Amino acid sequence: MEMKDFLQLETRIVEVLKTVYDPEIPVNIYDLGLIYDVVVDGSNSVTITMTLTAPNCPLADDILRDVKRGVETIENVKSVFINLVFDPPWSKNMMTEEALLELGLL
Image (cartoon, rainbow, N blue to C red; front, side):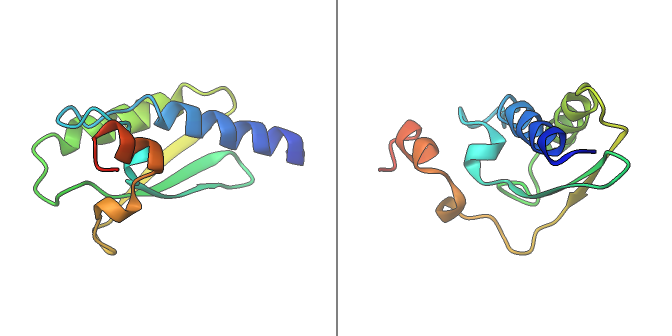
């Protein structure tokens, strides 16, 4: 895969992640800072390392399903693996400025 194509794929993944919301918070998971890492390997398999706002999130299955399904719909993505971690623990310091503004925390 050429560098241009790789960058376009990464950009598209971020765009999709910005469409996924924690139903309890009106901000997308990317701007909330829940996405720690996105890795695309040479065969276009995607590994997303992410967390949740709380380990006992009642909607965890829904959020993970939405991430997986969304990224799987991107052209040229072969597979998606989600690595759910809780270390480091999420905090509001991980949120983008846009998310902080949206939630009235700035």
